[in-house]
Image (cartoon, rainbow over all chains, first blue to last red; front, side, top):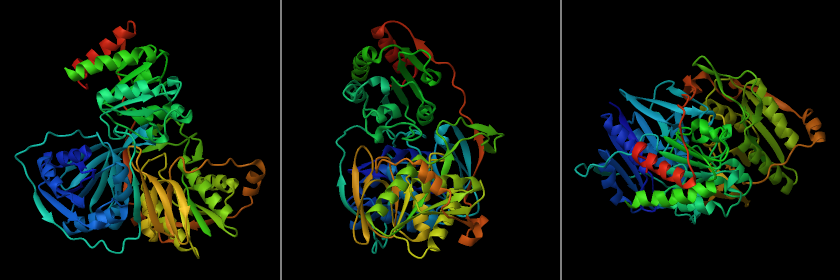
Length: 322
Length: 256
């Protein structure tokens, strides 16, 4: 059994489902599972952390945590992990987790296994695997030396457990000195998209060069909205200016692992395949039957996406509404 | 200004990965390049130098002797000099960060350190932050724009779902570049020739206080992705294909 500290991530008053994945995996393995909850006015979130498996919630509420900063998170998480003699410190490999967790590892004099795609527990130790070369291969991470083990886990890699309303966590109000921080968030500029980020979405609908224009992505957006999906793109589509770089899936973009990945008009360059091959179910729609994407596709549709996608969106809507 | 860039040499993105047993990746025949995000870091350093007369741009890289090629690429883009810290091929991010921070601490004055937000080989996205921790500097990651003030920077950083943050930090600071920060220049032939004559200082791990104890993780048990079983091809006209696909996704794969 390990003493596991999970850093809870939240935005706009809601916890991320990737946090539940970590709590679920830790508690299912019978570990002493702690959550670290940082922010201002976030005490209400502790209840849900308990339902997903946290036995204790270490709550720090502080004006310095109103906006996330890596500096404040690194300081608070390090102190709580040290004070609690954590064996393992986990966070999700989200834009937030990947930003602050290296600093936590440095301060704990520990190694960091980042972007892990599997997590198992062995006594007080963890066993993790991570992709290398954007998923062209994977490797097990061996932690060298003593000290806590620190890891970030890719969203969707573990699966979200069912909450148990009968469970609750003990909430411990903690004080951490957050004076003397030097980085300041001056402004947060919200995105104009209501869709999830490609790295966190359970379903990703992606388009390639064959989309032919930025406007044509509208049909993918409509299908994505039926599914609550994110819209991704190949590098070719991004380079052509159809989508912003933040939507790019692949070795020089984002690596994703959704339960369903629908590739529309993407031929499947090696760099793109590396970025999405761990998706659980892959659909490819392409006019070229020889396109490499079909080698990875569980379901292949050789056809014109401009004819297939609109019908597909309608049919999906029927299933969703059923 | 004293401007520094930390870069990493990585296999080209076209590289097909082969394993030598399960303990390592076979690097024979690999074409090596500067990690693409590092090009934005080099470019930003050069632009900052061009705006501030009398500045120098120094490029650092830690690793095997071959990484000097990546340093030369940055010198050909216009950087002034290089520092190579020799590390074993198996060095992890932590050891590399210790080495680069150690080399920075030996410099007389550091104003800004640019890096790429991640390297495309391990994609760990941790070395920038670790360098900052070990050098005692603040760090801003995934940066799309920088405004330089007197002794501080204001960075626009990408977060998620198209949202941004404006973060202010005092110098010296580590800034990890995201694609979009700028458009990196190509090295001209005369500059490639000139780069061959520029100085690249070589430091040993021990010179920058790095020892084997700085290795915190090791990779083993390498595997290539399991080949996928041939999927189902769905025949028929567009409407038939769409209907059958939805049926399979709903009833067989159970993902919608």
